[in-house]
Image (cartoon, rainbow, N blue to C red; front, side):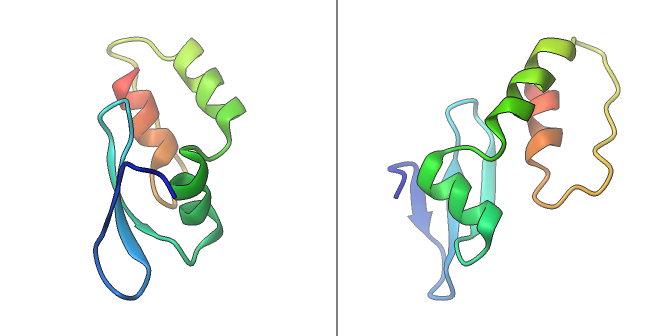
Length: 77
């Protein structure tokens, strides 16, 4: 488990603090949530592309956002 997590509730929810400053409330019983907690990322190839193409003042729409991981990455880029 990532050292950047804190127990939030007995149901498996945790608070994840990523190194880029993003904070997420994560359900560790979920596939995406468990990947974020255990690996620190979800779809790292997509994260890399987002960081490469987004610039300051870009408007990004994350259609179908689940946790909003990609939205937050584009905001922090």
